[in-house]
Image (tube, rainbow over all chains, first blue to last red; front, top):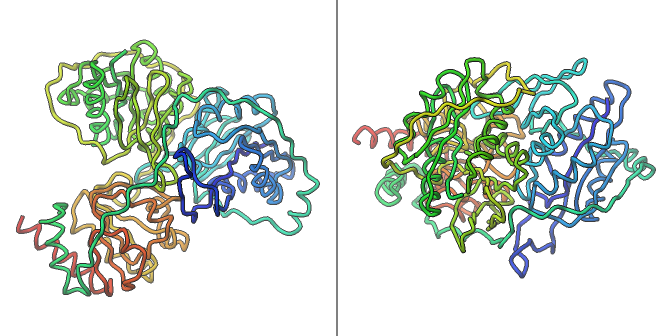
Length: 249
Length: 326
């Protein structure tokens, strides 16, 4: 089984986000970048399936600026076989990214395309579904369980207060959620082996965004709160404030 | 091209709060654009009955694709049917709830129409004739303002942000044919044992962190949720989800859910930056922590310093007592 895992390079979730002068992008100073955390579940799933089957190929694919190669190398060190970087400018526009990914995937042989359920920078949560539509494939999102047998998949996806069980034929697009597996870290051996694995870079042109990013701002500073008191004796005052002042009880 | 279409999500044969919020917002946008607000719903038996009442939110037309064998949870037929309606109706904007199903569906429609999509909008305005929306990025660490460059403007709408207003509407159900075949079949829907709201939907959230010390202590938070009533639910910090104490569905934060309830209790949560990102847009935040220097107090409207094992039961008791008095 051949799997294509689509990943994105994003600022680490522990990063404090500051807006750069010009108000259109984040200030890159001091920002540590990582592979999008949800993509780790997608990558792990692909590697496990290959290990269990004893054959197949895991291709990692990303669209982004040249620095994205870092994240692809991490994926190779973790166990992917080959990497493809579609070099383009960073964009907030999910549709433009979905177009170039779909175009690349269409030209390849694959059984399964995996994504993390969303990238934690733009939080768009739309590229997997768009790629599936562009390719005319079945799509399951936010998946926490995935079983595949004889070209047919059964997936459990998270919905409010529970799960849906979905059935569909391969090839298909699946986006992964925390809980699917425990992602591994790259081993030293893996890091050495990755140096010999192919990382192909191709220049692509993004379509015009359907939405123009007018500005990016830091959220308003929280209103200055107050410590109501200490210990259980302060509870009545808190409840009274919630009722009379904040009017939320 | 001034009309606005709202996708009404019908779950368990009910068009709930989420549906009413997007339908209400569609009306407000249509007012600004000088058009009508329309509703579309797709599903099995009971779908039309569930959405008829939405007319009272000023709806001019209600389109229902209902077929006995149609799975209300199947995304493919919904995507094809909504896309066909949008192509025919020539809408200025199409709104979906930012629910699990809505966030799954909207990008499918956007791809079919080859249009951009704004996810989880929290504000909007019409400036120079163009729809402009605001939405959080980086789980709320930044707020983006985006202007639509083409119609229809497609967006999902965050829960608990927009309140619908009741007003006269002439909308009656108009039947339309479902379009397309399911590529994915939904064979089961497993609802959790708890009969509680999802953390992304609740208007009151009680979240626990590592300060709870042991998963066996969660009955204290469950009791507080029960005291707060049907609109309340449980949340959790990443630390306790990673420790396996609580399910991931409850996690609030950058790698969990971003929430905007009216009232948020952070109990025994120190306030890591990725947690604060997920809950800082709550209207009122209450922090309960033994460490007066915990970062959570910097975003809290009200703080209580002390032993949560003493404070939480007392709080549940006090809330029950004031709720009894009315």
